[in-house]
Every structure is written in C-alpha cells, then in structure tokens.
Length: 192
Image 1 (cartoon, helix red, strand yellow):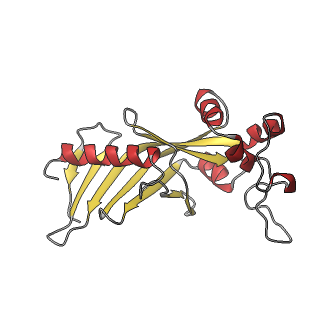
Image 2 (spheres, rainbow, N blue to C red; image 1 turned 90 degrees about the vertical axis):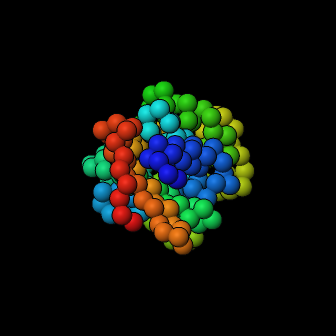
C-alpha cells in the first residue's frame, strides 16, 4: 500500500468482507468494552458509508450494561495469512428495538434465534449447560415458540471513530492511523 487512500480502501474492504464471509479471518474479531472485558463476537454487518459495525447480542449480557454505562468500544481484527491487523475504536450503542434491531432479528433463522430463549449469559448452573431450554437442544423452534426470545435480542452498533491499520512485512512493517470522526481524509502514516 503506497497511499493513505489505498490503506483506507483496504480497511473498508476487509471489514466489509469480514461481515459478509464466514470464511474471512476477520469474521470473528475481539470486542473490548471500557471495563476491560474482552470477547469474540461475530461481525454481522459493516456499513462503509457510516463506518458502523454491527454485532448481535443478548440484551441480558453483562457487556450490554457495560456499554450502556460507558460506550467506548475497541474491536480488534487480525488476518494471520495476510499479516494485517486492524484496530478500531469507537462509540458503541445498544439497540433493542427499532428498524435496525427489527431487521437483524427478521434476517435470522429460527435455529439462530433460539439462542435468546434460554438462560441469560453468565447465569449460574449446577452442571455444564448451553443455556437453552432442554426441548430446544439441537432442535429448531417454530415462530410462536420464539416470541419470548425477541425481548432478549439486541444489536451492538459501533460507530468507528479511529481505525489503526498495521501490516507486518519482513521488508518493513507499515502502519496508518485514521481519525474517522474527523473525516475520511484524516489519515496519517505512523511508525509501527
């Protein structure tokens, strides 16, 4: 990559591909909240125009409370084969209802939606558990059975404010930082 425009285009292409291909090395990034907690999440969408990442989450999850208390979120993507790391920092927000959450819920299949039927994330159990009600272990519920699950579903939207692109190379690493909150053209090369 020789220009900042090329690097920014690469960042956006990689994030778009990560959201749209389960085979992408960047499909399951590490998401960190302001309380220092980290977890792997599946990237469901990337809007290139608004620089917004979308993830699905259980509304009862501790990360939801953490984000609602302090919306600072970091997302780390890494492609081992390409030797490219992208670190994003931004403002996270939880949407339980409205057009984005409703469309995300409607786009899911019943097998995936069943995850929101069971115990809340982190709920204690006397034995190993998936958290699902027993009758849905390995089975797909019908639409009527999923009605209570919708209340537990939410989306996490992360508006990227800063993107840090890092490329490892034996000939010399390269790194660029973009202040997307200030505008698309606010990039600069920095020392790796």
